[in-house]
Image 1 (cartoon, one colour):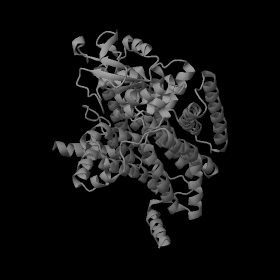
Image 2 (cartoon, each protein chain N blue to C red; image 1 turned 180 degrees about the horizontal axis):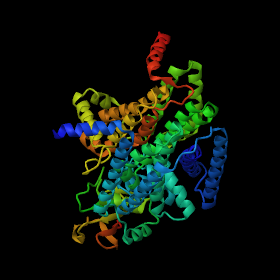
Image 3 (spheres, rainbow over the protein chains, first blue to last red; image 1 turned 120 degrees about the vertical axis):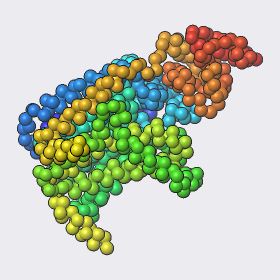
Image 4 (tube, chains in turn orange, cyan; image 1 turned 135 degrees about the vertical axis):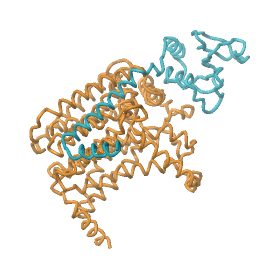
Length: 446
Length: 140
């Protein structure tokens, strides 16, 4: 399972690297030819294989697992994959956001490679959110260049790849932590989220973003679990966080939350110097992608549509906006995963049953897991405040985006919750000692 | 009585480990079937780009910006937001489609095309059928 998990973690990172290189080439050198693009892809694949071999040599061996539940999970996976493909046929160009934002931007990059791709940032196209980052469009562009055609099957396949990666990473990474079969139940919970499947086959960028958020969280957890791979995992977590921010603007909020929660986690289990060292290692992975994003925002992209200005601060004083947003969050949580459909069960309830199931084997809790639970909470708080300051009509903004924002955090949340009861870290601590650690940390701060 | 039975049933289920695993799996698989039903009952809802748009794009090979008019109530400046406009922009990218008759070349995407309703300073350059028209400004 460890081998598969490591391989799965490297795939989204390889895709993100390829996308960034293609865009960087187009921006700084000129239109990438098919040969150059193929060369870049092969270079990324070769580097990923080398990295995989390095990680595999240092990762601990995993116990063999009986195939029983995994076979059932595989069947459910195949079933969902088939119906996702069928659903994709209903949207040949993707859902509204897919074609009017992501695939439109990819078309500018591919068809305008000689230079007119910069027209993407024309003021007339503000409605297509031309300030959005370009990981997904550049990735589609890269594969279009290699294929020699802007055929629609390429973004469709990439959308499915990201969804499959998210489900597979949740299940295998959870089992890597627990050293048992509970990962297939965790994966099944994600698989049983109808809106996750729907947004995947509609080619929404929220699913690649969700996959990068998940990858970063898993790498952070592995950094705690495997001291011998701490440096590599922290750098990879930084890289994945950077790719999250290069996929959608919400990813920048995630980067901030990663730094805050990682610092919080280390405050309880480590010295301040080590905390700083770890944050530097995360920054090493993040830096190149952050530089790309900053360059993109400074020299290419127009200003975003949700500015933090005087009017936004004035909106913060409207109490009814808080009530309206809180009500929408509550409603979306209640109907999360498209459970308005008859017969569907809220995936949150499935997660609760999972936590009841695994409550007894161990009274121990990983402090890092508990603190990392703050991560989706912090990002959600950030999303909440974005709704408070949005200049768009609030009700319409909530209605058209909130369920997608929740989906962005769902795979990482499933993984964090599924691994929370696991006690196998060298830095583990018991739940009973958690409170005393918090007290000690508070004393230190005094 | 029924409520008591349900509560005792759930309590028993939660205590029995294998029953709880079975419950999670059953509910998850039911959710997958709900998704399947949703897909089966759905109809093609995305955008469909026909050959007319390919011909339009070929006719605009030299342009970087074009104007846009319609009879669907689209504004002639600012945000249009109609599906027809967005589809047109998607089809002709990387050419930028601006609202109104701002440019010498203008795309007309009409639901019911009526040549008499075209602004006086424009002439029809090409008709791609079904209301998709390429217009040009009359030479001064």
